[in-house]
Every structure is written in structure tokens, then in C-alpha cells.
Image 1 (tube, rainbow, N blue to C red):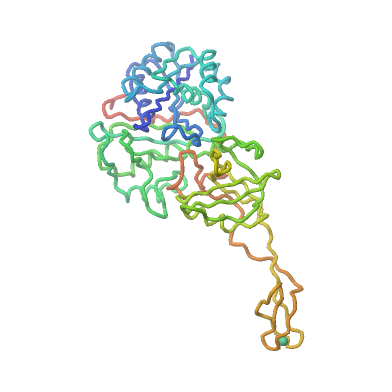
Image 2 (image 1 turned 90 degrees about the horizontal axis):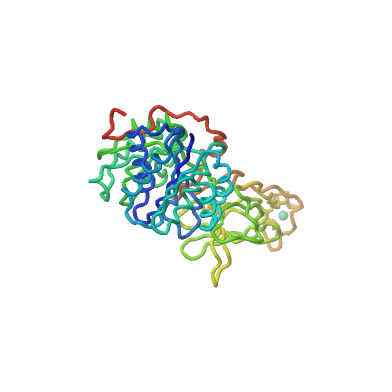
Length: 442
Ligand SMILES: [Zn+2]
């Protein structure tokens, strides 16, 4: 029978552990020969705009065929247990395939809103065959969402995650930077966010003490395997695994927010016209008001997004735009603010500028602009207003804009992916999707 297993191990210090736990679960399932994998392991990123989330807010799901679901579940639980660093908030749960449909709506909401523990518990009681919770068990929310968001339809990407040997955990990660730059040369458009072009900062290696060595993100497993052959790691790789994921899909921003009832920590988009020009405030953060349904929404674009802010400074009143992001809760001093993650300029307002008139007596183009729209002839000093107007050139183009890669979150859709989204997974699994240093013959 087909079963789905959700794992959420929301450890706060050892980010990346959930995926490592998943590799360990897969490894033990491969050894035990209890199951046949029907999908790549999936990494599902949940609403990133919830402040109490762990670093990446990721959960993992496994989809497999087995005659022994209980034994499979016990194997997964053993892997979770062996990799727990704290006993808080972890969960593993298994459901039968025919129950998955009833999780879809919940899983969608887990992407852009705050789901309640009570709802997760009720769904679990109704749908899950086996469940094990550790600590407070709030990982159940993510474990269920990972199962329900099965990426069978709509957009998805792949990530090849490589892990270091245990003796390297907590040590700096060494990798030949030129080999990272080379990835883009050879696989341009098939990979994303390997490095930040502006700063040349390498983005495939995380910075925490976790087991992850590097992660290559891309559009196909072929591209990831090719990348692996180009990359020059300078420390031994212990294992690697290819995951299917909602990273890089902006899956959390697909809901239109109600401008009259913005909820704190919700993610989504609004469309409207620029109501007032951008101002740069304290710390270099930029603020702009967008008017939609006769409600003005304050939007923030933060300093680390660098040149992304410059675009907003060129917007004028009346420009029609779509902005998306997460709602920051209101404080005593400030209203709710939408933290912008992308800008889509839908229609730029035409700005008409007066054309310098000709002087009636001298026949020359009047130059210096006087007050109240008057032009003045340099030679005879006569004044008049312009009678002709021409469209001013805007330094902006209609289209989509996002912050530079160094400011991306896991779910940020890279600019190269816009318009090239996948619509459906074909259900095929590559013959090479994992490698373990100690299981060379599997
Ligand atoms: Zn004149």
C-alpha cells in the first residue's frame, strides 16, 4: 500500500537536522528493504513569516509503497530518535494515501497563515494511522503539512543536499569557490542561488553547526548530478540525497490578502496603486504606501535587500503594482506593515512633461524654466507657458523584481524561474538520487 510519512524535527539550534534525519530514515529503510520509494523525499517549507518558527521552517515527507507500514513507521521513528538533539517539538506521523486529499486544504493554509495545534491534532486523530510525538509535539503541524503539500501538481524544484562526516560538524565548510562560480557557467538557468553575483558570496553552504555541507538547488535531477561532478568540495562528503521541494516557488505568496483585514504573520500579495512615494527611514529601510480597495497599506522594504529598494524610489503616485510578502504585526507606534518579498510593476503611470516652447519673437527654444510652469526666453526675456506635452521616459520597466540572491529566503522564487514554473510532476524517479559513503553497493 502507498503511505506518506511526515517528519518535523523543529530543533532550534541544529537547523537542517530534519533533512539529515530524513536521510537517516531513508538509509535504514533501504537497508531493511521494507519499502519502495515512490517519490523523492520532499522538503516542504512552511509560512516563513511566523516569528516563532525555527530557522528554515521545513518539514520532510516520504512517499513509499510497503506491505509493512508499522515496521516502516518504527524504522523512521528510530531514525528521528537517534538524531534528536533536544526532545522538544518533534513529530513523525504516517497516513495512508487515500487520506491525503483531506490534508490539502490544511497544508495550503500552513504555507501562508498560522495553523493551530488543535486543528493539527484533530486532523491527525482522524487521518493518521501511526503518530509519535516528542516533547510538546508541535512538530505535528509541519509533519501533516509536509504530507498534504505533496507537490503532485503545480510548481516545484529540486535540492541536492550533501552532508559532512560527523567529525566535521561545527567546523567551517571548505569548498573551492571557483568551482561554485563554474556551476553557473555550465548549467546556466538550470540551477539557482549558487552565489550572490553582486558580492560573489557563496550561497550553497549554510553557516550553522548542522550536518549539511552544501545544497545545490535546481530544476532537474540531471542538472544537480552534473553540478555535483563540477563542484570541488575540500572535505569528505558522508552522504547526499536529492529532495523535491517547494523552495524557490513562492508557494507562500499565492493568496490575495484582504487589505481591509490584514492578519499578522499572514503571507500573500496585494495589487494597487502607489499612494505616496517611497521614503527611506531609520536603518536604511524603505517605506511606501500602496492603495488598494480604498485602503492604504504600508509596505516595508528592508535594508539588506540592497538595490531592490532603488526600484521603489522610482515609483510614482498612480503606478499600478503587485507587492507580496508577510504581514508584520502592529505595534503601539506602527500599523501592520507588509514586508515586501517581490514587486511586480503591472502598469507604469504615464508622466507628461511640458515641451519647451519657441519664443514668438526670437524663434529660439525657450530654456530656463520659470515659476508655475513658465518658460523664459534667454535672449529677449519674454515668458510663456508650454502648450505641448510629451511623455517622460521612466527609468523603470514593467515586470517582476526580487531582492538579490543573498537576501532570498528558501521560498523566494528566483527571477530566472518566473514564467518557467513547472505544472505537474511526471512521477519518475532518477536511478541516482542518494549516495551513502557506507552503503556503496546499494
Ligand atoms: Zn525671445
